[in-house]
Amino acid sequence: MTRNDIKELIMEIIADIDEDADFDSLKPDQPLRDQLDLDSMDFLDIVMELRKRHKLQIPEEDYPQLASLDSCVNYLEPLLKDA
Image (cartoon, rainbow, N blue to C red; front, side):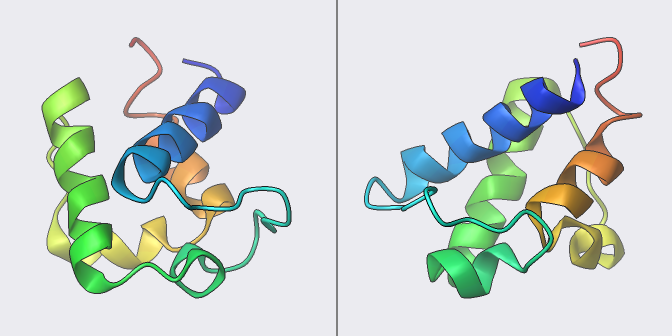
């Protein structure tokens, strides 16, 4: 998967969780939770969806690395390089 594919994957998962999510003004280096008004359950849903779709096991201590769109891509890129 390319970096752009991973960005699209994350946004697709968020859109599935929150169909009112507004990506137009999304800043990729800012926390997703603040920009899209995601709560902790929404965040866990994102992690669970990554597990379901790509068999990724993301340890809880790594959750902070999924804070922004850019950090998600940086964290997931090596894990999804062969996807």
